[in-house]
Image (cartoon, rainbow, N blue to C red; front, side):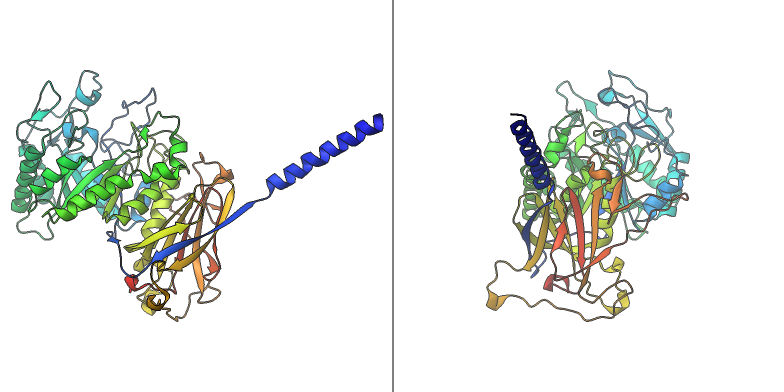
Length: 544
């Protein structure tokens, strides 16, 4: 009897070890990314990546957490070396200055003096704060930093100034532009360079807090354009006119665009498609391909409205933090959020969105930089790699295999390719692959022009060039594998090709160096990882 028990126990242990052995084996799948390189389906700005700086004071709290610290335009440490280097690394980075409180800011200009008092917490006030003020000495300091860092500035103007708020929540009356006009004149007088002036924040459609009708907003935008044309009449290039900086509402946007066809350069909309920051299911949404696909409807609808309108304006995402009310700590500032963020950049590009502004550069729980230490969060490095690798022309891309792979392709960015620029103006293409699967490595093959018959397939150009040191052969591609430290999705430390990314003691942004693989081999995309693959020796027609 004892020997039987012993044998049964041995059998049980062998079964357990066998199960562990099988379950611990890495799962491997395969798939094919199909790229139609005949023509671009969209085109993005060189400085497509944009980020915001906000007005929220330290007293801004959500769900019992106060996450803004000293990240406001009014109190940010402008002398921080990491801040300077983090902006300079993009050369240039668009910075959009604005947010919820921008419509309650007055500008303390010399020719429009008013009581200049800071924001104060007051629950009975709209947005929970009283009116605030931008002193001109602070505006001077901000512009000194922006010039030193080489940033391109978009400034959001106070579109509620002069209006009255009705009991139904609507804001009526024309915009009183005198204070904004005074700021613009002061800015020109100081020789500060502004890339664009944007009117208002989240006042379109149903609005947030209050709303402005589309016809009135159009009249105000036309007034802003006249002011800018007049003040900048001897200056070229003139700043662009941007509006409305609100949530997409098809009917509202259609009317607005039709009535600003000759006055508007950029139509902006905001994205917080993951819901409130307090939502405990944010990670589930981020890892759900079907949920991610949902935002395509907004991009598609706005793209169609812009194309069918007489406007010459282009579309931007003016603010996108994913989860509203300051995001969620260790989610929207952690590795897992790069899945959402890079997917958004890829999706927006494919619908001809020219620029995408991330909420925030610093501040709240969704900053590209840590609000306290200024150390870059994972999404900062994701943004920087996109900026350096993904070129203007967007290629039609699809993936056959698991639904857990998200795939996007662009012509490679010419100015930052590691192959010497003087040797070739054609730099191939860059592929972005996102693996939302927690256990399966996907071996990805690349194919071209899936819908073309073999007789009519384009022959892609292969350029024979002298290669820089580090390449094994001219058939090598550059690969940038992004993973979380210890495979923890909530980690705020990102690894590039297995090496931790962090600033040094001088606050310098680390170099983002690739590994190399033969271009004929599949691209290996590990579980819960992101890969940028730059293939320099294959040039689709859309990239010539």
